[in-house]
Picture 1: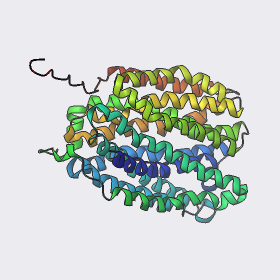
Picture 2 (picture 1 turned 90 degrees about the horizontal axis):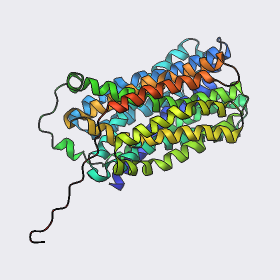
Picture 3 (picture 1 turned 30 degrees about the horizontal axis):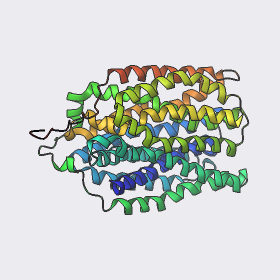
Picture 4 (picture 1 turned 60 degrees about the vertical axis):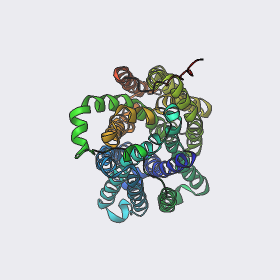
Length: 423
């Protein structure tokens, strides 16, 4: 289990590095480079729109790779999705800017971002299922949480590289070529991930299935449609909160408040490190107290924290901004630490890869694709404190709270010990 969990964690970290490095670049530099004819606000919104395309592609990727995972196994999904995401990320770093290529530049950016999202849509289902289906029932949430640490590592790696380049280069150098380096590095990371995953064993649960679904998506829609919609609605708040604090807040702080790029990246990275470190602990609590109570608790915390969060962010004080982001990510981790065990347990094994991945990635469309765009527009309309952003996030959290309340508990019931005869 430790070796399997480590391989899943590292691979997921690499794929999310690819995904997050684009989000950071969109917040900091892609607007002026690829949409120079737009105003600064419109350029940022356009860059975030290309960021959102990745989320639209993720459910399509979950259908494509979910079919592969339910028909051919979880392991092939890990290899193909990593290759697709890595190759498209390297290609983003090679796209000439608008000044060189004209309107073809943002179009290419859009296509490559779509391919990134397609690959990541398959990654989560394969990595989580391979780990969860190997894990013992009483520690399933703990072992399945390690792929959930991957996004935190990927984010820290992506932003750490951006931070180092931002500190070492002038603004002109960073805009000219420095921002491309993290995208080129994705190629080496993808090769490392493929090497780690090459010797993983197939899921024993998959090998036990005698009658594989012919078209998994059809079965999911026919027999689990309500469940997919509920899980998507429940997970929307996690995506909305995460991308509000890790993507929108970067643009808001640097463009509206005048906070330096370096300071803001350090604040976000510090909070994400804490979030990643606490993920296994929250998962242990999920094994002890159940998946649903943890999700309800984290979601309720999001409802209560969103308005204080935007108030603290608007101060422009690094310590208060760090506390705002940290509070949001702590609420997030209470929910998402157990999701990797919760979602697979909700679906029967023959359609588990498709059902869990589609529900998970539809939540990304609902919560992650639009949040940076909507938050940027709302912040522009408001005053010093972007209360509209807080209200928007609170409403999403309330909707997710209702969806979580309608989902069942899935934690395996411990089998009582049998008393010896004659005792």
